[in-house]
Length: 304
Image 1 (spheres, helix red, strand yellow):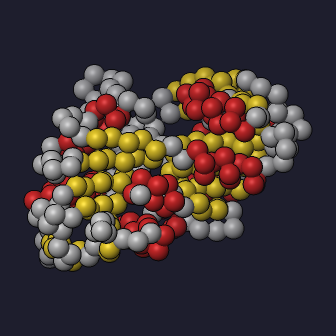
Image 2 (cartoon, rainbow, N blue to C red; image 1 turned 180 degrees about the horizontal axis):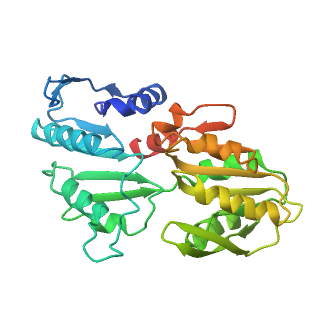
Image 3 (cartoon, helix red, strand yellow; image 1 turned 120 degrees about the vertical axis):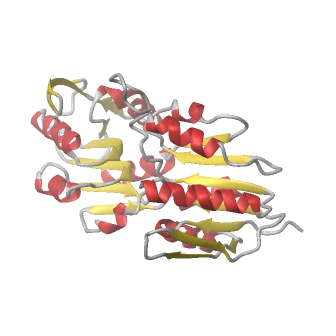
């Protein structure tokens, strides 16, 4: 009889740990965490892991969380874990995957190298990611790291079909995500569209044209990550000006920084936003305007 896998998480991802424990037959991993007056973090693994298969869930949503994941993973391995799966629902700095200007730090790569340095368990170290911003990031991991990039396509397709009327157009905010959106559109049997943009200054762009006819149709805009919402709003306005009926948005990673969700709603061009729960910020912004879809079933598929 196989022993149960032990599911651990960092504090910011307790919600996913609890959901996974409800969905499958696993053991809950308990960690004691407290902060010293000088800000240093104390962690103690309360669940024995020697010879066990362990799972650690934690997104690199901040530098502090990143180190918390690394320290825990290192300790779990050193205390004898037979195998370890690290789930990163959201991998921070994924937009810093290459240097555009001389001297820029490619943080996505340095983080990958850091996690690659973890000691190896007897059955290897497995890293699982969800809808990474760049397909190249898994190649930054070194040594014998085992990488799995999970696409949230089932969640996105189901949400799109629930939101929009038949004959809708699957769209994106710019040509950079066109290939991914085209793949989604082909699977649903609908047309794909994207906007062409011209850069006016370092932080400002304008839409010059749209690649497909959207007049009289619902438009579902997919973007892997919504931060401030500026590009999303500009694209939605362009689709609306081109005659789109209703516009909806689906994102995997809802960061919603700087009151982004409020700005998106107040723009008046987007009917509803759907986001997965890959980032804790999605819960901080809950409203009727925002619908949350869980990635827990996709995590479960990787565990059984």
